[in-house]
Length: 209
Image 1 (cartoon, rainbow, N blue to C red):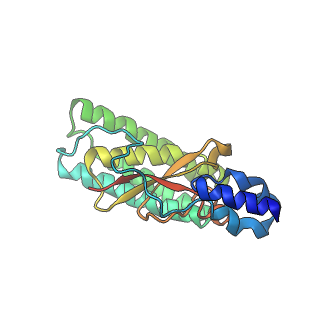
Image 2 (image 1 turned 60 degrees about the vertical axis):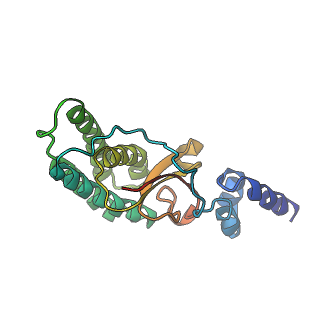
């Protein structure tokens, strides 16, 4: 009882961290709700906070924006299936991401715009291809941060989103090193742990077109 009281008091001050009850979560299923209470998805970052830097290429021609938007749409489906811990559907989504990325026409871009798009699309395809080949959730989730950062950077650079996007972070993902993901919903639904730590995380950047 004393230990639970201390953990709860600490959570009131450091609500974005999940690490203090990690051991209890693994050992005692009954403590899951308390653990999740330490990270609230309704917290928002400071206005103007930037986690992923991206150049401004929003003046690029519309086809590229539409094509990148298709990558984002498929990414969001994949993220949702990782939240649901559905490895089979996540594989299919990853294949769809690769297909969408291959359709992005960079030939009409020039100079730094083209270089940036090619580099980021390469990262998208690298991560998504690895996920498409992996049948296990752990292997799929290991590629999510690279995919998330590259997708978010492309979206911001070319103004490819038609909705508000939230760049979210879990401090316990990747063996407590922390990792990010992209969502269209400010409410936290953790794709790295699914139901085990569904609400563990925080909003770190908001993108509004």
